Length: 192
Image (cartoon, rainbow, N blue to C red):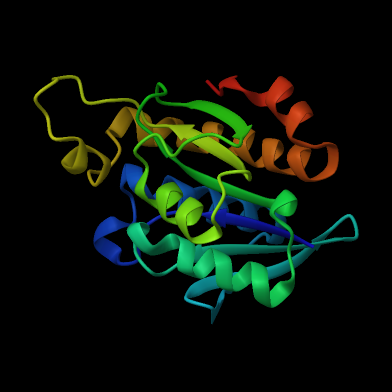
């Protein structure tokens, strides 16, 4: 069984913000597979959906703890479903990558991303796989980073998100079926 976690913050006011790109990818992936909006259930402080892809069992999750406590939900799901850390993928925003870029990697530091920091602290390791979704940095250096990631995507960016999400979803499936090295080789870089 695999656990694919998209990071974000619950609440309508955060729905289309850069910090919620993990949630958006999860929603897009499920909708593309099922043909309709996801029907999530609540468990272990997350909205989850179980599915099978080519016979492989997958749980997707959107922690509802707010970003800074994401680890609580991830750890609870891993323990309940007995999912090893090798079978987990965490999807999150990254300001140090340009908008539209993807990067699969594992066993790296949190890079200032508070959801990843929480997961690493609670699990006691950073040895798990991640898909970093580039959201870029604000154009002006004095612009507050917190305000930036909690701000909505620009209009031009929003128009390009489906293309980015499509490539991210293909990358997630590659990760599950072919592993992190192949996903990194085939999908790291710009999706645009």
